[in-house]
Image 1 (cartoon, rainbow, N blue to C red):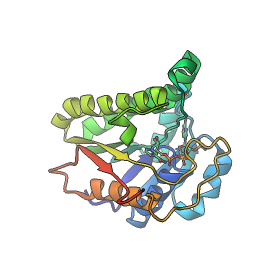
Image 2: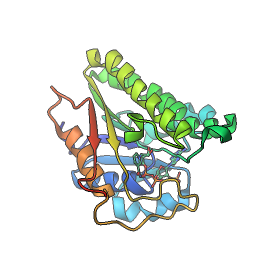
Image 3: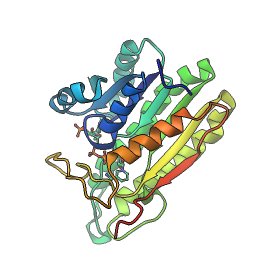
Image 4: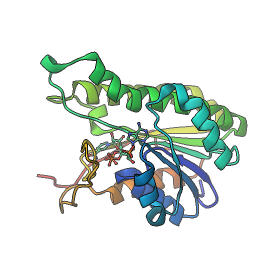
Amino acid sequence: MDIKGKNILLTGGSLGIGKETAKALVEKGANVLITGRSEDRLKKVIEYTGAKYIVFDISDLDNISNKTKECLQILENRVDVLINNAGTGFRRNIEDLNADDFMTIYKTNVFGLSLLTKEITPLMKNNKSGTIINIGSTASLKGYNGGSIYSSSKFAVRSLTQCWQAELRPYNIRVCQLNPSEVTTAFANKERIERDEIPNKLTTKEIAHSIVSVIEMDDRGFINELNVWATNPF
Ligand SMILES: NC(=O)c1ccc[n+]([C@@H]2O[C@H](COP(=O)([O-])OP(=O)(O)OC[C@H]3O[C@@H](n4cnc5c(N)ncnc54)[C@H](OP(=O)(O)O)[C@@H]3O)[C@@H](O)[C@H]2O)c1
């Protein structure tokens, strides 16, 4: 898909992977709408990304339908690419598990992601084209100590990706999952402070590059899943 002139809705564009991806897509000529929970953080990156923004908390499940309508007004009822990037996480060991913590993470990573996608797919089906990119994680592939809630939410995203691939390929809709390993961002930082880059760890630029590459492949094909590792993080 040629990115130039395409309408792209990207959740979680005020920081980290989403911010860098929005910038890369705008540089390629896309019309990008980013979301986030904080208007201050969204406003701060407008100059950097060149994207439009809307305050849209995807964990506010009762408002997803109305907020999507606002997005569609801004995007004149056309979404060529949906990037489900907004995500959150923290560690919990088995003895500390509780339903509230599951809900906090699942509302954003699983339920919000699913209900937003549900609002967008009818448009893509009508157009018989579209690309959806779910940002998973290497935690979508393998559990780890303390990962009960986050990792299981990302395993759920991987399952959603595969279900939607089965349902949507007949409509020429490409559904891809991209699984980064550790990227130096504000992820899991309550104060939302971005980490400094570390020379041997992934930065947001490698992930933005991967997302652009996934979209740019000719529409006759698509990358169903892509794992991105740092070459030597040790
Ligand atoms: N960093 C890593 O090591 C890593 C590795 C693998 C996968 N990932 C995944 O990559 C994605 C992006 O992570 P990141 O590292 O860029 O994290 P980040 O720096 O914390 O950025 C997350 C972005 O999502 C927004 N956001 C969070 N919750 C939201 C909600 N409920 N509704 C709307 N926007 C929301 C945040 O803005 P506000 O806080 O203002 O809402 C921010 O713009 C996530 O899905 C994460 O799970 C990250």
